[in-house]
Image (cartoon, rainbow, N blue to C red; front, side):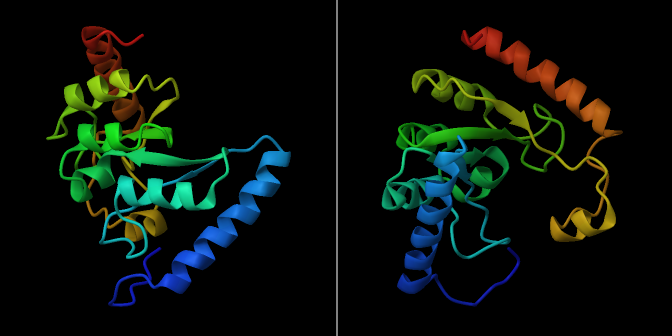
Length: 176
């Protein structure tokens, strides 16, 4: 994270990632742990940027306890259409981060939440929706995530409003 080579990932890097994840997932499986691989946007890493690319890595590892972690913030930057990305990775989808386009309160920005939730319903996703944000992060986290302003009045307010929004819209689209 944060190391940029100025080039695309190499075949060796892909091989190392596949081998390392295979080893970690093998051990994790013994312990009942599932690994969810989160693609990050191009401003944070060069290695894995799109949900579809993460699904390709999951398939390359080939173990059932390696899945894709879909994050609406990163997908907002890298995916052409978030709902289509969800449909494309349905078999590999393991976890979802709910985050607004600016990492602020869900429902206050430009994410197509109705489309995202309808796609999750369509693929019969039964896992967690976890709000991820950095309302007022500590300085090291703020620097790492390039957050230079408050994204909500407080973390509690972000969680409360975001949860209220997601629950309300989920009911509207028929997700319990």
